[in-house]
Image: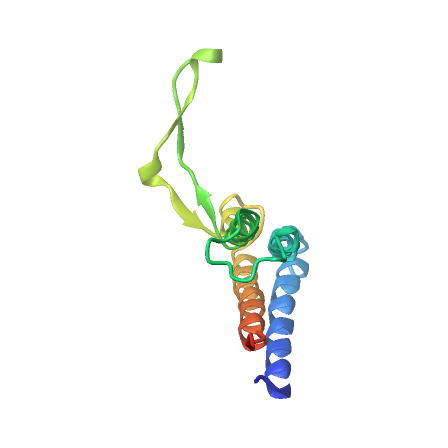
Length: 156
């Protein structure tokens, strides 16, 4: 059973995470790093909505519910979007108009964080990127830790 010390420690880590993300925006007068916070705020919503839409009469979820699985998928998608996005490399073909096209090179694609993508495009600065990544990981880690520490055990 988690006690008062656990709540205090988790709230302290959460406050540091939000402080880092807010400072990464405020110190450089660029508020794009707050997109990380927006994805963490929106991420639990599909899981919560789909969890309430599931059949409450199921005693055991051995087969699983499609709507619950879909909610978990959307939540995972939004969390990965906040932590990392795929950088895709394209090469412009020679030509004009409809003859011109883009070729995708999947072997050159890699997973990077959203703040790193913004820093690569020179939208935010490198220190803001580092602060935003660390703050986002602290926020998400606190949310996961809170869920693990305060799970209610089923009694039969």
